[in-house]
Length: 271
Image (tube, rainbow, N blue to C red; front, top):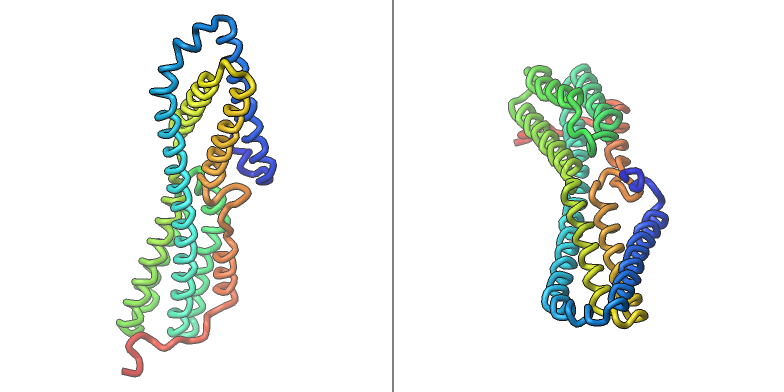
């Protein structure tokens, strides 16, 4: 099922729509046949469909809309986390250039090593396996390096570096939380079962009018298919055809690998 994430968007959407439309039509045909065998059944279920089916349908569609809104918020959080991580790397690179050339070069190498760990080890698997232990150790070394390597520098610079590493760590934590915070399989099953029940009620509502039943159930099936597909493709914001790109982070790492940035004025200098 997860392989569908990597299909072209048009293909995955058509697959979802076709599946839900097919299920809707099958339920409509089954409901019409069931009513034709005994016309009294329509009146028997009519009251149940009217009193329970409509509120249940409205509740299900509201639930789907709410899930889509939550997933879109997660996508925004993921984009902000990547931007924050890139900003933290850029700030740390610039601050490191304020130190002696040898210290600045070693700091750039450590920062680039962290970025490479993120890109090559953590990013490809974080949506499925969470944090990468080696990347976490590299970040810890970076934190220790900020304290030890800049021991001879001003307290203002050391403080700024410490805050920068904390910001980098916080951005990474946010990225990992969003990457691993996907909808559990149990909830997906519940969603699909509810969709099946809603379509069954829609088919029963007009079962004595075969053509109307087919059209009503088909349109509702397509509508549910559109919503389920939208939630599915954005559930893992770092995976699939519309995944958030690692290009900003890759560009930041390449700038760090190019060597120390232009020296910046140390915090507190010129006062």
